[in-house]
Image (tube, rainbow, N blue to C red; front, top):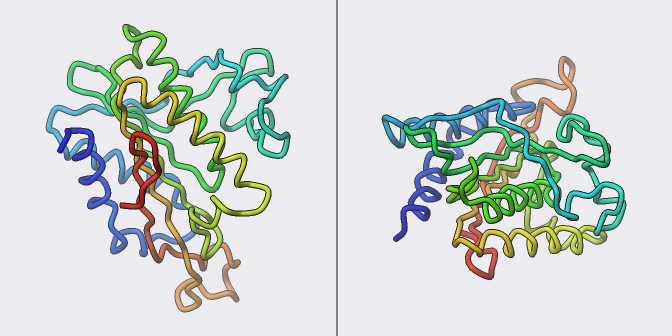
Length: 231
């Protein structure tokens, strides 16, 4: 078993449903914190970089003026919280970078709601830059962790893969991610949190439906060499 594979297994064990099903509402910050905690506990000298350097996206895959996918999938030009740029010079950032004690970047973290295709493509952009500049700060990237947390109930990753109008978008993003990750045998772990309604805790008379959705199940995937496998 490779070191990268053990990365994925230990994180999947760390993010267990007993922790997650006590988190209501928007769990974005908590999920980042749990993943950061996992990396720090994994090695006493491990480091985490947050507020990470922007990645300048120079490939056509992040060209807002001439998007290769249908307009309905192109989140990047409108998602100002994700892309801080103009259309001619798009940039992107991930949620955190995992590093060794010498500051060398080993992994990246993305935590997002349901922008599946967009996020998978962004991870591919990090790998592309690592492939094209192996002496750069991302040249030592070994793995990526992607955590999706849909804010509606029963929103599984597998359903999204086959959803009408979305299948082509996400399949193209996955293909691009395969293309970039396989150039250096990197690992990608995808965690999707399926939620359910809990009407007993934050009752409707005081809270909206949004706060009654709680994690119920965790889907775990790994991108192998040429396939997306449930683990």
